[in-house]
Image (cartoon, rainbow, N blue to C red; front, side):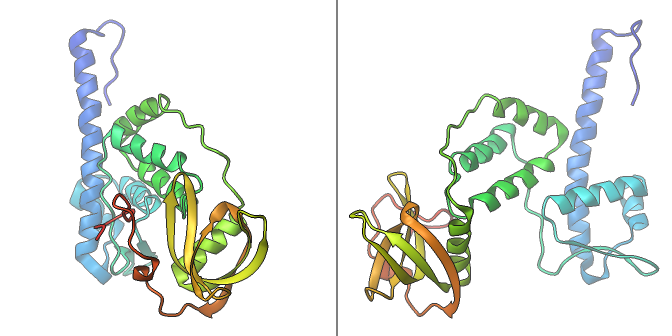
Length: 257
């Protein structure tokens, strides 16, 4: 990149340098997207680093740096060393778009930071960080500046041991054994088939089929003192058995009906 000496540091030269940096940044963001598309098109055959470098008119070192950035963002990239080797995307894998605005990036950071007790919260935090890491440098710098203007005073997260067990049981649809203290102070041990996580009035709840009561029950997560995932598969209980949700209730993604 050209350097500007003190003698020629004029407004025109400053504008030129600024535009040069902007174009270079945009080109890299576009190249990352095009690189992932080329890997996807080539399927199981993959591509060598040399071929990718020729295609995008950059050095092999630059291609390998770009491939590392894509992998850090979560792209399922495989590599095979030696003759006939190369790089490719795992079948069915895809790279989500990362062309976010600074405000969009900060919105994700704020949402995750403000809800540390949400199910899969630590995974969400790691996923957002991957997205931020592959933003182009100009956007990331603006996002960092804006993020310093958004403060969150969230309560400390609860025991990860309990939360992790609940998350695993829900994802794998296995019975979870919990030690639960009700609002009247009674403590019981129950086997529960997890059906839903729900947030109401700032509290997270596990909703599931309680084998002790033989009925669908709501358990406030903060009152679950111990939890362990069993090897027992859940039965056939469905979301419909929970009942009609409030008018303003909705899934975290997708249609609400």
